[in-house]
Image (cartoon, rainbow, N blue to C red; front, side):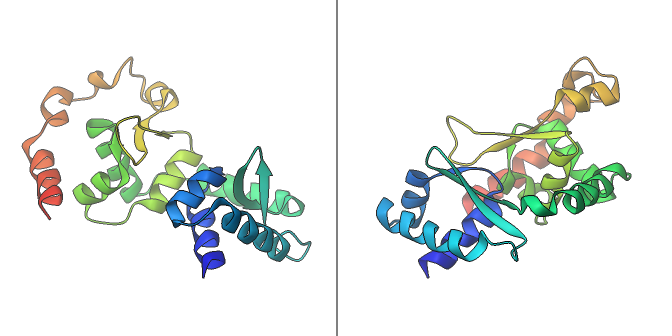
Length: 180
C-alpha cells in the first residue's frame, strides 16, 4: 500500500519531492519511504518502462524514460503549439484577475478540475507555480512571457482589472468553499 501511495504522489507531483516531505505526507518513517522508493526504482528504472524515478540530494521525481526523449519532446511540441482551448483561456483569465491563487480556489471558481489545464499552461510558459510561505498549497500566477505576449506592462493594465480583481462573485465563491 505504501508503494502504491508513494507512486501516486510522485506521479501527480510532477516536481522533485524531498524524502522528508514524502515521509511527512505519508505519515511514515523516512526509512520506510527510502525502502519503498528503492522498490519503485527497481520496478520502473528498466529499459522496458516508459517512466523512471530519479534522485538528487534526497529529492525524488518521476520522469519520462530518457530513451523516449524524442517521442516525448514531439508530444510536448504538439501540445503547446496549438491554440488555447476555451477551458484554458477561462483558467488563464481567472489566474490573471485573481492570482496568485491555489488550485482548490481556482477549481472552486471554475467548478471543474483544473490539473491538466494548469499543467498545459505551465508547459506553455504562461503560468508558473510558486511555493507559498503562508499557504500549505502552492499558488499559481501568470508569467512575464504571458504579459509580453499580451503586450502589457503589468496585470493592472488588463481591461477592468481593478473591478474584476476583487469582484464580489469571486469573494462569494471562495467564502462558500471555506464554509463547507
